[in-house]
Structure formats: structure tokens, C-alpha cells
Image 1 (cartoon, rainbow, N blue to C red):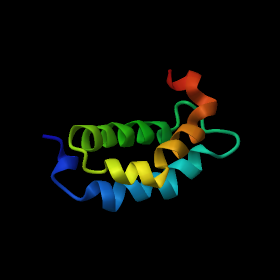
Image 2: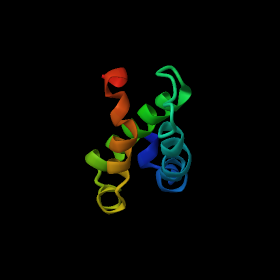
Image 3: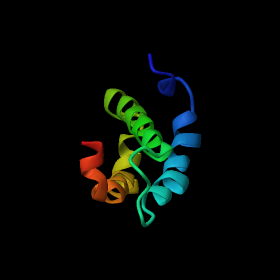
Image 4: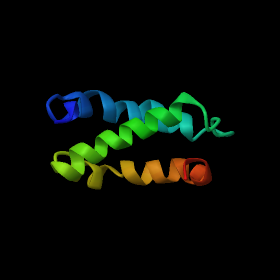
Length: 84
């Protein structure tokens, strides 16, 4: 089982990190290089969110009501080709 399902790391650390640090840094102009560590952080955060949200439904309502997924999509829309 994934560690994120057994601890409070997602609500206490990962979500605040994504909202307060990672998304603002990815939304800067110019956008970070495709090789910047922020992209690896975003990838790891989203993989963890998929595990805890869609496999367990733990944070599904939080993601629906907070708009975090919309902000991720808007913050990365200019770099879809890089991540594709």
C-alpha cells in the first residue's frame, strides 16, 4: 500500500506545498526550464494525489471544492508540449 494512504502527509504537507510553493513557482514568467526540479515535484505530487483520491476517495471532495486541479491545469497549460 502507498505510504500516502497510511499517514497525514497529504493534507499536512503535500497539499500546502503544492498550493503555496509549487504552483506559484511554476506560474512565473518565464516558466521554469523543463528540467527544473519543480516539474519533478509536480509529477510526484500528482501521482500521490491519484493514489489517495481515485483509489481511496480520501481527498476527492477536497479536490472538487478547492479548485486545486483547475489551478494545476492553468499553471501548466503553457508547457503541455514539454510534459507530453
